[in-house]
Image 1: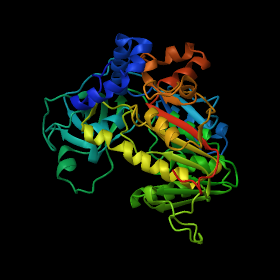
Image 2: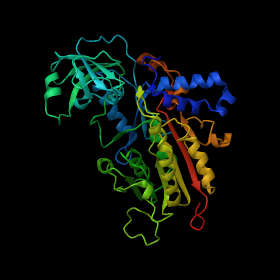
Image 3: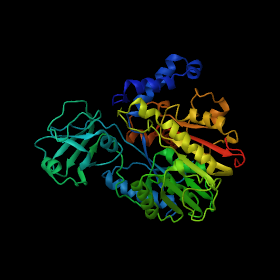
Image 4: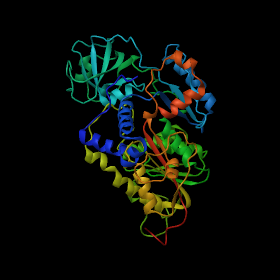
Amino acid sequence: MSIFPRMSLRLEVENYLKEGFMNKEVVLAFGKQEAERKFETLLNHLSHPPSFTTVRVNTHLASVQHVKNLLLDELQKQFNGLSVPVLQHPDLQDVLLIPVIGPRKNIKKQQCEAIVGAHCGNAVLRGAHVYVPGIVSASKFMKAGDVVSVYSDIKGKCKKGAKEFDGTKVFLGNGISELSRKEIFSGPPELKGIGIRMTEPLYLSPSFDNVLPSYLFLQNLPSAAVAHILDPQPGEKILDLCAAPGGKTTHIAALMHDEGEVIALDKISNKVKKIKQNALLLGLNSIRAFCFDGTKALKVDMVEDTKGEPPFLPESFDRILLDAPCSGMGQRPNMACSWTLKEVTSYQPLQRKLFTVAVKLLKPGGVLVYSTCTVTLAENEEQVAWALRTFPFLQLQAQEPQIGGEGMMGAGLSFEQLKQLQRFDPSVVPLQDVNLDSLREARVEDIVWMANKDCIGFFIAKFVKCKSIQENDP
């Protein structure tokens, strides 16, 4: 059941998205009315959190069963004895599924209010507490220990430090303030700890702040599928071209049993630091992370590669992951996006630059996986069609496991090609209230099916390079 307004977009962006979802191929196949309904349903789903929290077990350090038992104990503590099931995903065996309970009824709204920014609000709906930097406004009488109703300023209209706010706000639940209003807004600017500890969130989802940090990595379900689809093997040399914060990089290394070499690139130094921290925390030694622009990762002069640092010689990697920078239109929950059309459309040329570099760095017979966390046709299926035209020696490959839906029509791909893609589209299932009674009655297969469908919007394509292009560059 829908409880939030549909995702709000600038008109130019909404029209652009709608045009993609109501393209000629789709309208011809399903009819205009059905295409429009599907688009509206998608915008509605994107403003709500997914039905499951998914975590990946670091199998390099512990077994899935051991970590599952530790997690069940942790959830009992967090949920005051409530017994929420934890399921191992049958096709992604290192992934655990935790149902999100909600939206919860009968939470009494308090007179004392705190307004948080949209980004903070999205995190709260997925189990986070409210950290001080996320608080935009608080009632003038708020003091430490008060029970506070927390709201999200989804359109970014609330002034920092305001004592009240009458604009568009969405209720997220109640919490206990750790600090007074004065401490939040007049305290030192470096104040970063928890400002409000959520005690009655609208959606009951576990907090993973410092929970089993060496054993668990919080990761959306399609993101956890990507490394399995890449299928890295021990001893191989793998490139993660746009790697931060390192979730997929560390997953690749774990699947290889930490045997081989995983090169991770990102052009922002703080993000590279995060990759290194995550590798250290998870006990993985095969990862080497560099602060480097992926578009420049190809060595143009054919001098001997001595250091093993970027840029790299052509055809030097067995497998490459391009989890491309994208418009992020599949992230959930996202109630409002203020991006301009220019910003949304700026990603396609960058993705093509990165893809071209990836193809040239891949060995003949090597595998390239391309993924995004967006729903636009231009960044997904259109990129696949472009790649197959531009690089005729690339072939689409079937993906294993196939847990998402097929690709969307509209880019001129054949039905067979669309079946080889995976588009995770949350609009294919109705929004549902989830409570413990309904979970107890549900079959495991139905719960897993729901987890596969009601996740973030995501896209995956897998290619194999059939021959060398050293002699014949496109």
